[in-house]
Structures are given as C-alpha cells and as structure tokens.
Length: 470
Image (cartoon, rainbow, N blue to C red; front, side, top):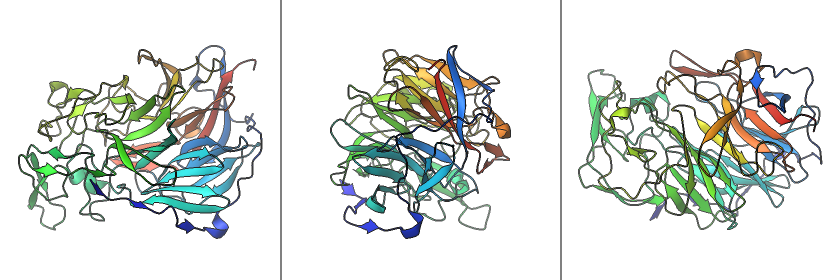
C-alpha cells in the first residue's frame, strides 16, 4: 500500500534553550490545601484534592523514570486560542517546571519508556532523551478535524498510537472550512487503511472557495473538497490511514495499520493480559453527513479489526432511523462493502467525549482490572444537541461486561466553570505507579459561544483521588 509517512529516526532536532532536563525525584506532589474540590462527588471512603493549577490546555499525564509527574500542554484548542505546546513537570509544591518545548500543537500523548519520553504531537511522533528531541516519524495525516493522539507500548514491544479522521463522516464539507483547514490544505481528505469500493455518494453544498454565494459544488467521500466519486470507484488503502490505530517499532520503522474504521481514537491502554483498549469519539451532528444520537465507544481491538466508520456507529448502520438528523439528509452509505464490524465493549452517551483511560492495578482505588475513563463533555451546539449533560466526569467500566458507573463528577453534573472548584473537562486519568492514587487531568474551561469554541488558558487542573485514611 502507498506510504505517506516519513521515518526520520536518524534526524535529531536540538531545541537549545527551550528544552530542559527532567529534574524530579522519587516524590509525589503535595495536595494544595487552599484549593477547593468541594463540587466533586466520589464514592464513600474516597477524597479528592487539587494538586496543581494554572495549566494551559493539558491533555496527557505520565510518570518519569524517578516517579516524577509529567504533563503535556497541548498548545492548541479548537477555536482561536493558541499557546506554546510543551511538556512540564509538577513539583512537590504544585508549581510547574518546563521539560520539553519546540513541539507542534496539539500534543495529544506522552509515554515514558527506557529513559525516553515519546511524544505524539501534530503530524509527528518524537522522542526526548538527554536534552534532545528526535523526530521518529513526520508527515502523519493530522491536518483535518482530528490528529494523531494517545500512544502506548504493547506487549510486543511496538509503539501504538491513534490517528483521527480528517472529517466528521468521510466527506469534506463546509463544516471543515469552519475548522479552518480546507483553505490551508485543499487536497487533504480521509485515507482508508485498506482498498475500498465507493457507493458513489456525493453531496452538494455552497462552494466557499468562490465569492459568489450562489456557487455550489458536489463532493464525494475519501476525496478532496469539490471532487466527485462514482459507484464502484476504488480508493486505495495507505499507511498510515486516518481513523486508525497505527503501530510501529520504537525507532519509527515498520509502520502498519493495526485496526481501522474509527472516527477519533483518542485513548489507548493495554491491560496486564495484553488486551488493547481504545476509546473512540462518535459522530457529530454536522457537515454533509450529519449524524444524530451517535454514541462514543470503548473497544477491545485486534489486528485488522474494522469498527465501522464512516458507515456505522458502533455496530449499527447509519441508515438506522435513530441517526437521522434534521440538519441534513440521511447519511447513506459511503462504502459498497464492509468487513465484519466489531461490537464495542462499552458505549457512552452521545457527545460524552470518551478520552483517555487507565486500568486499576489493585483495589486501592476501585477494583483491580477496572477501567477508568475520562469523559470530556459535549461541544454543543456546534457538534449537536446532546440529551442531558453528558461527560464532565470519570466513569468506572467493568471489563467483563462493559457496564459502567460514575466514579467522580460534580454535584450539579455539569462543568464547574471559572470557579475551578470541580471538574470542567476531564481528559486523562492515570494511576500512580504504586496504585495508591488516581490522578485526573482537567483540560480546563472550554465553552461554546455562538458556535465559536472558547478555551480559557491557565484553567487546567491536576486532581488526585485516593482512599481516606491512606
């Protein structure tokens, strides 16, 4: 299959004064007594404390070689706000020290292994070691709605990461102009992991490339904006695909598509027995194939599994009436044939935004083997109107049944807002190496005003949950 990525394991970028040595020790940050967590409810016998504040767009949490706590600040959020993408260390007093800079936002994943910090940032997988940042892979297809996301090492020693799609549901449309990337990358589109045959579905919309508001254009799936497709047309698969789990050697070589048919696989985690868990953000109610009532999912995936995107939500086809949107015609089917579609282990409410997860190592927090998942919350009204108030919480999933219960959320079930006395946008959860603490990364205040996202810098928080009396 045609390859679009660029391995650069021998190319090293020295970022000079903006990169600092990792400076921690065998310590855990001390909870900050003056910082309230009074809005958050947890089960009896647990307590919540606030460890650090002042984070800007944090997305990822990891422990370093000596137990130091590292956080990735994305440097990017949907909307006009931008910041410097970097990795910081949380000191014992809750202050932050810079570790790595010179990254491409968003930074969506960090993972420490054998003295090296692996970093997933837009279009690249890089490694930081001894004051040097080395790009392992560049040219990942991350110029659309979604990006390369979380990364994790498997029991086979390979590095796995999630790659999001360019679009909501396969067709580049006016919603992607609102995201700002079509004028910059007019030839960009989604890429399948394997060869597919198209149904010839094309959708008409206003052509925002011209000054005449009467101009319209037809666009098909897996092609650039303004390009039509025909029934039976073959789209060649490529490595790396969009909407896929990718794996490669730790040096960036031998990249391959592992699983596909995911819209935005944001969180990855391996169980002690070697099962790969993946969270997936479901469809939005927008674009040329708007989808209503689409759930988010948690999957257990194996090699070559197909999860249904862009024609299924979970294992349910999009032509099911429950997905019909008032914002546009029935979604229809993009692909003429589909491989068997994997059934999710768990489904979360639409627009809950299932993000990252971790697995309990013992019974100090939760039960051994339980999967804890951060639910970010919706982007309404841009992404669609959800039922109730989904997300803004941490849930606990039974790996045997896929059933889940709320583990931590605000008393009002919604975001805490600018008081910062409770959750706003949980995005990552991570157990301490000894399993005693569950840390929660809160992205911070993220609001939608008149369809425009507004992420507020400096409102990210690091929380800690533990049993009382420990």
